[in-house]
Structures are given as C-alpha cells and as structure tokens.
Length: 143
Figure 1 (cartoon, rainbow, N blue to C red):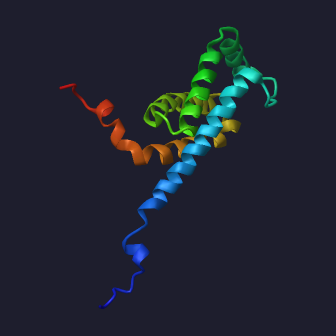
Figure 2: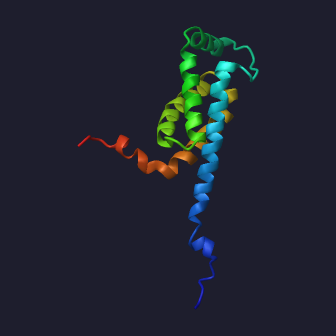
Figure 3: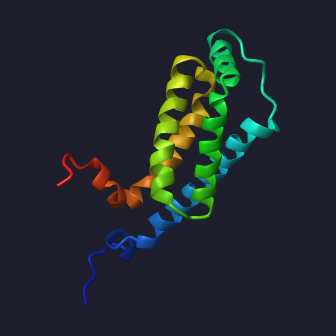
C-alpha cells in the first residue's frame, strides 16, 4: 500500500488531544475562579490599597456588599468546573463574570489585563468542545 508521505497524525489528528487541552483549561479556570472567589471572602492574597477610579469602584462594591455576590458566583462556578459538574452552567455564568472583569481591566486597571486575558483564553478552550450545549440558548425562537 502506498503512503501519501504524510504522517498519520497529520491526516487523522488525535481526537483526544483537544479533550486533554479542554480538561486542563477547565481545571485551571476552575482553580482560578475558586481561589479568587474565596479570596473575596477570606482575603488571603494581599492586594494594594485601591486608589483613583478603581478605588471608588472597589469601595462601592465593598460597602454595598455587591462584591459578595460576585465572589460567591466565582467560587461556585470554580467548584462546578473542578468537579466537572454542570460545566455548561458554569461556563455561561462565567461568561458574564469575564465580560465584567475584562471591562473593568480595560477601563480602570489595565495592569491587571494579562490575567483576565488568560482566564478568557481558558474559558474559550473549555467552552469550545461543549458548544453544542449552548445551541438552545442561542436560538432565535422558542418553537
């Protein structure tokens, strides 16, 4: 039998390689959101005192206790990703959280943009293989 000169991997890529990448991305994303979500309650990661527009925004979130809801959503979504339970729900929830994180860092604290972009990349690597789960929420009509 003649071969085309291509390696078998080039013709038929390993279908499990994307699964491995997605699993690693899911675990890293889950760990990231669990740690930062819990940090919102336990304050184990030291951070500088916020100043300027960032400080005013942070003060508003803290004094209104709105931040507790945000940190709680992050921690719960992180647990869901780490335990591989309700992953589509965690991904949809984190899409809204990431949109807010990116907006915050783009408009008020650009120095924190690299970790936000990393989280977004991990989100896409986790969401892409399960994109079929999102088809119903992206349909135009209900019937």
